[in-house]
Image: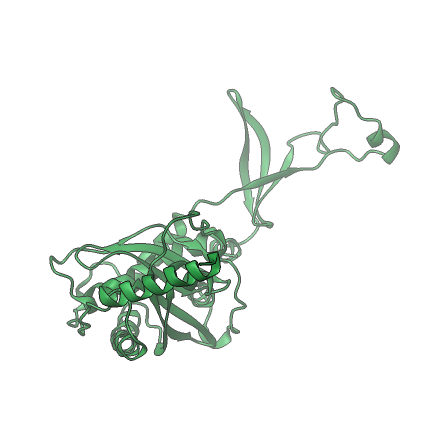
Length: 314
């Protein structure tokens, strides 16, 4: 038997074994499950977002695609945020995905932009702050999932930190992949149209009985989701850059600079420092020193607090 024939036989045996053990279902069964998940999300996620942010979003079931788990993740393409998750007594691993456009639009709105004035977001990898914001979004998506599958024990889903699909580590070579299904739903917010994706091993999915969760009294919460989102943004770490202008030199002098040569600052008195983040100017500072550390002291803001946040979120 040739190597190609042997590989085909092993693949056939694997598919047959997966079907016999309930780890691989037919199209009709997967479509039925995907539709059930889509109905639950369409009914509960928009109300959850509306009650806590005042935003109207739309959710609609799109498809349920079978395949190997790593292939399904790779097939998402770019401009997705992903998280690896697990839920005790249901699935030891699953992947949640959310289109970058939805997160970007939500971020702009949380920073004061009106949906009617915003154009559809051009998808791109999310910034660090946007990924921090997506933690709250994935928490809502995971909680609907938890309620829909009604896993015994009432355990909370565990989610890893979110990451851009471009930054996802490559699968370990030689590691056995498993049959899974990607349930895709469209999510609309303003003029932005994105997707929410749930990728689950078929072994767990085919044993799932999808049920609608019970409505919760979201008004009883002591802190609104909007406040939590704002706090999440404000806790994000941002890398700052400081620029100090030096005295101008001729090209001839610059070309002959050597180790140990000194270039004076442009300012003779208090040295002006321009502090920026993400290429956006934030503060005007003065250069100084505290003990063994060089420092800058803030003298003036370039923009208002809201404008600073809007700059940083890009």
